[in-house]
Length: 139
Figure 1: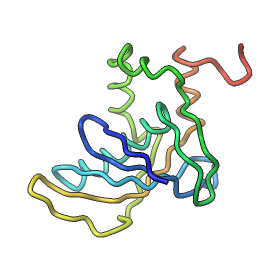
Figure 2: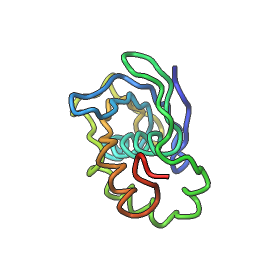
Figure 3: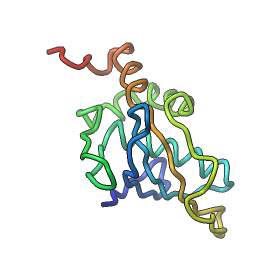
């Protein structure tokens, strides 16, 4: 099942593709960018934002996941924090070196599908340390 989301006005779709050996989420992300590097970075940002604020449906060896952050308004209330987090997105996610399908050239750049692994535990620990969420098991 796909969930359509938008990150920074970049149309994207996200689908769970499995779990990594270290327990991270492997997400198939279809998105666009003016260059292939920007498209890949947009895919990473979209994957992290999906894990943080939307969660995803079950399928392809995945169980449904709720978002790490339950308060959707927090994205806007703490926009400077999340802008900084997205600037360092490679600390919490890895984009595969191979495309899922051949990138398609468009008038404004490229449309791509890429597999992104989101290191959810590392991401959660940062959010806990920074006081945005409570540690698991805390009231």
